[in-house]
Image (cartoon, rainbow, N blue to C red; front, side, top):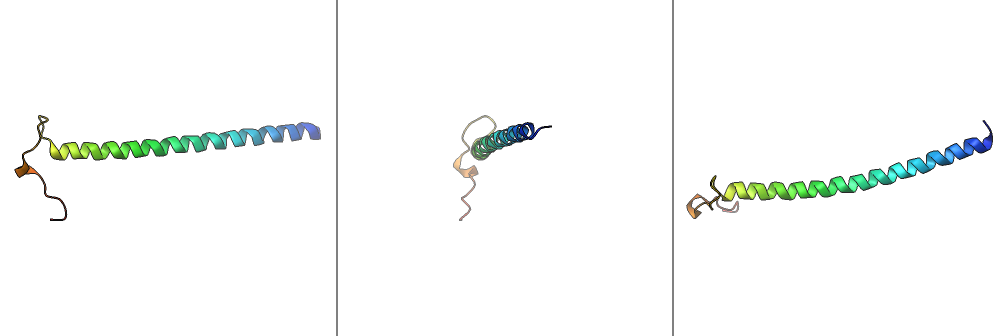
Length: 70
């Protein structure tokens, strides 16, 4: 294999590595955003489960859990 061929292949590999690095960075950002959305949805579901009964009606105040500072 000639030196030019080796250099061309090396450059190709560097380009592929840089592209893969960019793709991984982009996917990482997407996963982080999705984790934030999932956390928000979990908090909303927890709130709904705590504040509404099985029929979807708001629980009476007598059944409300007091805030943690009481």
